[in-house]
Length: 197
Image 1: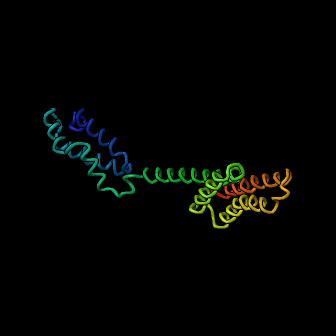
Image 2: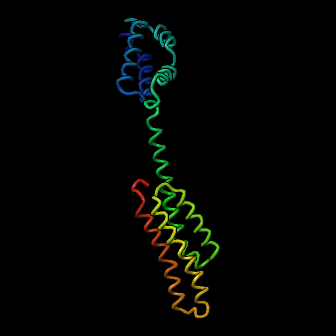
């Protein structure tokens, strides 16, 4: 049995190989080959456990070897999963925000007709989310804003202009407009968003 075949050396090198999995395969094999060569010289052909332990202690712990290898690598090789995880989280946040914006704007018409204050709050929050979002272009934002703001305008104008003759037909028209316009804006926003959002 040679020095590099000793169970302590095998365990040591296996631990380094596992902990250095972030390295490209070629660089990892180069590191392991260097360590094998060093240990073959340090331990010799007929290793006794004390000689092997002393050689491994002089090299340092597997964690220290891997930390040194990590320090020598460019940052992009050391943490390749971090940007992907960050991009995924960002996409999920953007998607959640997009859905919240469309729901708030789509429901703002009904909420305005049923409960004035809550409808106006939903409308204000939805428009704030819409205009601070990078998902939609300016033209889509303007169209969605016009459609959702039409509901309070129709309700207010209908109340003033038709106050004397506000019957079931007029109320039905106001209800249909109050539901249809914000719903149209929400559908338009959902269709206009990119697939990644």
